Length: 285
Image (tube, rainbow, N blue to C red; front, side, top):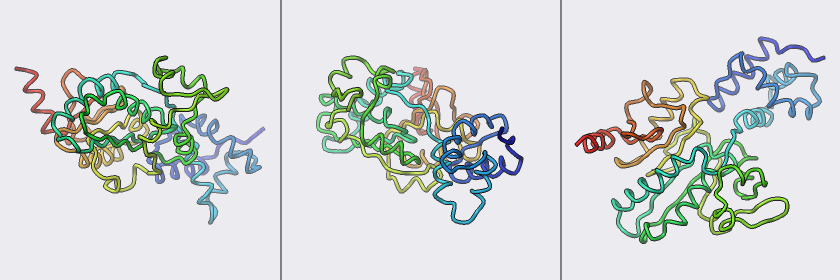
């Protein structure tokens, strides 16, 4: 029988996760720590989580620390998750951005915390079906994540039967995937539309460049208020006046930052404050 997680061990793990990834883990999430990190404990031939924490306190534990962070920050992802943000992107955001930009210009899209790539590839498939709308504009999609194993999966573009059945329309599966028993591989044309990069949201976001669209969904719920504000304000600074940010259904900018404002009648869609205010006035007329 393994020993219960000590206060010192919990503090070691919680401090590591907050400092390296912004992830906040309370004592009510000890079960999650144990579930996510049990594989590392076994691989390292440690007795329990206390042994893992003790190992992390030793000098030269950087590689192990990275593996712990990656194990804890791997989030669930599936194609066209929640669907409504993708409908809005297809029917409103993309046409509006195209209308405001001359032919030959590039529209940049960021999928933050892209995990195994389903969100970024969902956007790429929409873009692939919008060539007539684009009318000569280019689209660049960047997916970033802190977890190297998830980035490798995303770049590979291979998904299980279960993964492609979650949210992916059958017609898109047939059009953009090739069967490789027992899995499915995304088409090279779609894979080439997305660049995946290792990136920590606590880093200087300016290194990524400017973005017209930011998808940062179901990420902020794991951060404390100061970290949420820091990330949101830094991301807003990357966006033009007509840029849009998509957050998860349970996430909000209210009480966190004034740089972004919710779009009228749209859940989880935010504009740069000045432009969003203008759109609200237009909607009210």
